[in-house]
Length: 112
Image 1: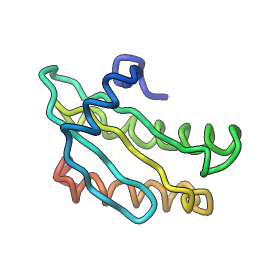
Image 2: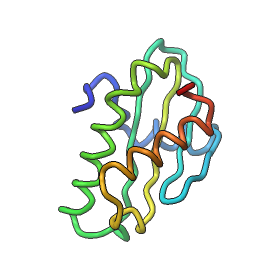
Image 3: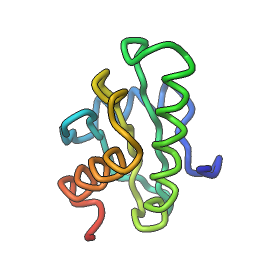
């Protein structure tokens, strides 16, 4: 699970990242990111009602939090918002992990 200190929770924070941040598109998700003045990485997740009912949306968010837990220590001074598209429901955990890793590399946030 992702620590509370590494999560974005307020609507104001999400809106700032959408407005001022850069965007990288992937196959089934997008990542918005903006530099932060704090030395930690903070992540928020946006999963629309179009993805599915609450059980499905929560499952997707749990998987993304688990994947991001490994990358939070490698990304410093950035705030991220991960936006998920409906096609993501058909992906298993390993594919989801691979796609998110490719997106973070494309954004030049990690160097793996």
